[in-house]
Length: 207
Ligand SMILES: [Mg+2]
Ligand SMILES: [Zn+2]
Image 1 (cartoon, rainbow, N blue to C red):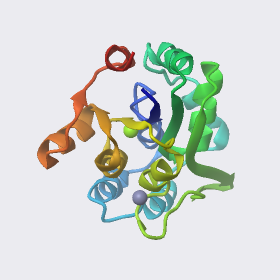
Image 2: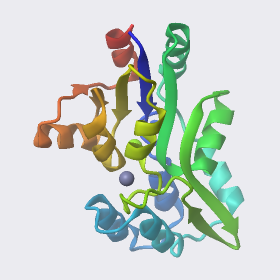
Image 3: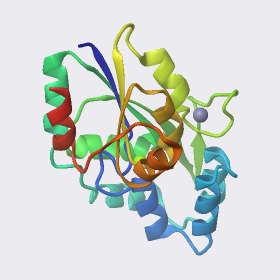
């Protein structure tokens, strides 16, 4: 079977959400409220990020150092190589930051195509969203639109994720593997989903 596999980054490939780690380490009080508004989709990713960045007292070296301490799912690399053997296309779709993904991929020697927001540092941090979708207006990186464009003709679209930025693309995938908030959301919304803890669980289904 032909498959196109779409994978969230934060909390899915990484053990903890790198954006959450960043604010927990460096943001002043108030970021939780902003984040909750984002989770309820009352704030777009762009607005959420720009408000949160106002609260961050750190330089790019501080973020780089923190990213160096991030860990990935122990079976992710094995998962990637099996996908390659099988000829499945793999895309990482993230409403987080290129900087964090680059740092983690470098640390673990991972080469994978990804789409994410850009984190720009010039005295303060800013977000840029090259994959914004006007008809969505909410995501920084609109995973739903990317999925539609990247899905290989005639393939099964597999989505793997854990959180609020995955709720929309999960509705448009053929098969959803979920944990955390995404899993609860799928249950509430009646979206067919398979629970997983690690990429080894997913391998058992797709090989
Ligand atoms: Mg996530
Ligand atoms: Zn969107």
